Image (cartoon, rainbow, N blue to C red; front, side, top):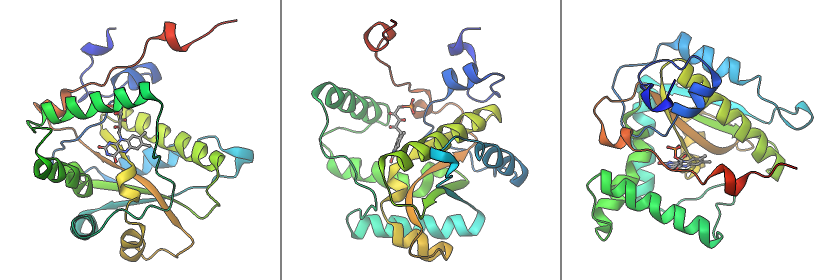
Length: 230
Ligand SMILES: Cc1cc2nc3c(=O)[nH]c(=O)nc-3n(C[C@H](O)[C@H](O)[C@H](O)COP(=O)(O)O)c2cc1C
C-alpha cells in the first residue's frame, strides 16, 4: 500500500506502515488518551535495546490537571528565562544539515502562516512546545546515568519505539528536546530527585484533523546518497 494513502488517524498495522506514516504532530484534539493505551505503549517500549541492557531511562507520563499546571509553569519559565538543558544541545552543524534545518524552519513557519522576520510570532510558535502543542499527555524521559554518547543512543532507541508504538495505536506524537529545556521546573512539579536528569520529552494524543501543520511532511535525503552496499 502507498504510505501516503494511510491516514495518520488510522492505526499502523506494520512497522513499515508506522515508520512511513509517522511524522511530528503539532496540533492535537483535546480528547484524552485512555490510560490503558498509554500503559500499553510505554510498557512495550521498555523492550527497547540498551548498552549492556543498562536501561538508562525512566518515563513520566503526565495527563489531566498535572499536565495543565506543568504547561503553565514551563511556558512561564520559557518566557522569563533561557533554556538550561542538562544535555549539550548541539551548537554547530555541517553545512548540508544547516540547509535542512533552515528549510524545516521555512516550511513550518510557512504552513503556520508566520513571517520568518516576525520574531514575536516565531517566539509565540516556539512557546507552543511548552503547551505540548495541545496534546492531552506529555511524556518526560529522565535518566540518572552519566550522560555519555551511548546513553543518548539508548534513550533514542526508547524514543523511536514509543513513537512507532503510538502510531500503532492511531496516535500522533512530537519528540521534543524543548521539554528538557527547564529540568528544574519538571523535577519540582513531578517531585523527582535532583539526580534524575530531564533529557527530553514527547507530546502524545490524537492528531487534529484538517490541520495544515499536521499534513506537513519533512523530506529525507535519498537512499542512493546515504546507503552503501558492499
Ligand atoms: C531528539 C529530537 C528532538 C526534537 N525536538 C523538537 C522540539 O523541541 N520541538 C519540535 O517542534 N520538534 C522537535 N523535534 C522534531 C523534529 O523537528 C522532527 O522529527 C524532524 O523535523 C523530522 O520531521 P518528522 O518528525 O515530521 O519526520 C525533535 C526530534 C528529535 C528526534
